[in-house]
Length: 479
Image (cartoon, one colour):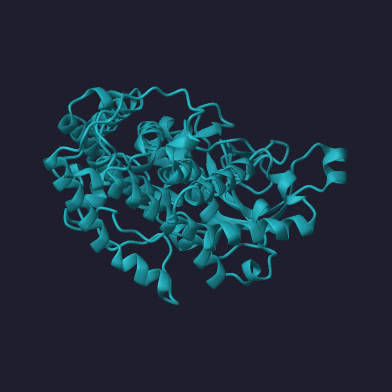
């Protein structure tokens, strides 16, 4: 009676989607545990308690409205990490159907509770994407139950919104996407370049145009093929996977690309996944109560899809936006505009008591963002360096940076250990500097000749002060 709800060739695809989403949850909760204290903890740059005091549960639903402490945050994020590892290990395939749903649902609630109070540090599109994908995966069911076709289709619809929304925002935004020149700049000016970004930047201009054109085809045409019968849908999904792999190889975008690849597998037929070393049981019938739940979730998501469709159709399309406080039914998109020059904020400190310009100023070195011109850009993704990403935004959106960058300088003056652990190198080895300042530089990749002559990856020029030198009051500066 309920056979029409089952996807006859989606069992292996479901397994891949579930395990990749579980892997992203593992990364996300690991990042939360490692970075929350100096960013949003009780003494963080933008403390959660201060944020909760000026908002409501209705606007930002979170378990932390009941009570907040750094210890409780660790419990929430640690519980999420354990559950995500269990899901990655296949626990939801051995648990009863209801228990598996509860495990996935709890993962979603725990991460939602973090994202909604994460403020500017969690204002990235891949946070909403993980929550929306995680919500849908909750209702895919275990290996011994036939995969529900409506949920797989909703995952494909989510992928469509991610890709097509990104394609539209580009065509409506910066004219360099239309004249095929954006990638002459983007590899150099993207938030966190990777080890090969300089190589990509120095590709011949005709290849950059091919890159842009391929991007337009993948984001504006291929998404429609995802809904066609097999094998067209699987071929379209393969194109998405290859494109995302290209993005992974050319830059660092946290877990956005990994999660997009996970969604692409929802469109792949099992007959193309026989190469995977996966042995799954023959799935049984979908229980009636589960079928009712799947249909209810499907109806909910159809209703929530109205706004994203209207947003994509609008000439004033919003990027990475939604209308629900629980991050469902979102509209996605990125890089509607591309910066032509790279400006970097560099933080410096000195132990000179007068803080004079003639003093010896030493740089703080970040883990991922460009700083030392002789350091090769590292591979970071799918891990997410939140502070490094926000430092990229500082020259572009200085008003936003004012909410946290002065506090960051104060933490450096205090030699705050949790803050220093976010950095790659503290030039004062845990001691307090007398003064700190923020300076603005213009960066560009070195040419081949410059690289050969100097060994530098970057060439930089000082623009001036971003924030003037500051010191702690005398009463606070004493060790």
